[in-house]
Image (cartoon, rainbow, N blue to C red):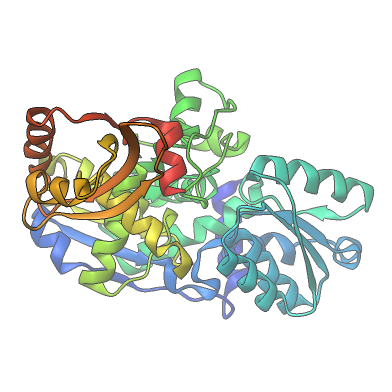
Length: 414
């Protein structure tokens, strides 16, 4: 199967159904990086994600018999919405398996888009566990599994993003694309390699789920331990077999972005541009800060914003992670004397005038001279932490810094 030809075919299949989303020049980042930086706004696509492209391309090409039996998919959110929309458009029944950790907003959207044509089953603690259950169900019920990324027709559908971009801007030096399972990256690599071979492609994935980085190191797709599934749209345990085969010699490099940096970018882009990004949708823009300016200077660059399905209930967690990443939020376990006025003394003698205690948990112990308290401190300037350490040491406070104690720390911000 010729993937490039399949992408051209997918372009015709999707015509008059999906949107050719805007390719917008971003003045702020263009000025900051001394380059022409464009955002490909797939967050404005139907379902607020590029995923409808691959799902609809695959489902439209099923046989009459396959359509009659219905389809099954496993997804953390956006692929589920794409399959739901496709089922609704084509009057096909679908069963969608979603991890228990899927944000409520994505579950509701999948259900709304599918109308009465889909059934949602919440099961499994991770995408990979959910996928395994979905595949077994699919086999037992003789239905067709619509893979979120490791399928040639799905990849071809995602490749239409690249075809759209080249219709909008022919001269591209650098394309920055997010990577989860690798469907979008593979489609883009194939299209750019054929139509714009001079374009360098940089893949971006979260630090907590570097499946492509690990596969490149091992020279084959290999299961990894996902240490942080916050970027749910890209937290994949193993890169797709087809996707890796296509990408491995076509990606210029792969950048890993810390989850806290992604959170900072979500807030910054919303405040400055009014764009609502989901964590995976912020990957490509976040990578701009991690690429040397000389590599970007005077270049034409496209960042693919892959999705905008962000659940408002995650706002506090996003803010918290951003502050911690920016070294403005710190947690301590402090042993306080058990006497009146001790917290007032701590605030007046240790904190800066504009710093604030945002978390305090203390349980008084009878017959004890001292007792531990967990204290969360938010700073105005990150340099202020040095002065806090100095003052606590001078006053002989016994304390433990919790930001780097993953077990305790995750309990606080989870």
